[in-house]
Image (tube, rainbow, N blue to C red):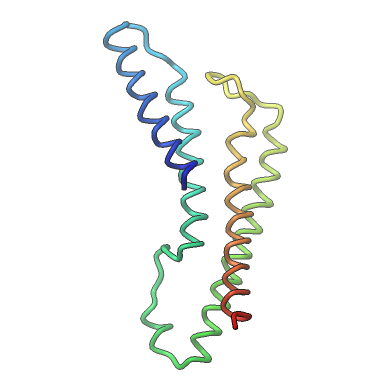
Length: 142
């Protein structure tokens, strides 16, 4: 979350620079929009991965919690399996997108478009790691 927090501070600072440049210097910095979109992707993906780790995503618990212990454990395990499968898919597709965009350049920033796909890959890997850690912790904790 530290990286996402730093990205949020950078967004606020760059939008301050945008306002200053537009209204005081009468010279609008054109790169601010592209940078803010890129940082929003990082904030969102890292926040989603942290949400998996902290179990803060939206879920309907009353059905699962109203069941006996064995079906409840099975439902938790299946939930983790779905998250792991989604994380694998997200990481794989993020990696493919990184390779696809390696030749493209973001015009206002001058960096490759690969940097737009990096957070998808990182988020997928972190989601798999966090969900797998939960499965191990829940089933093998003594």
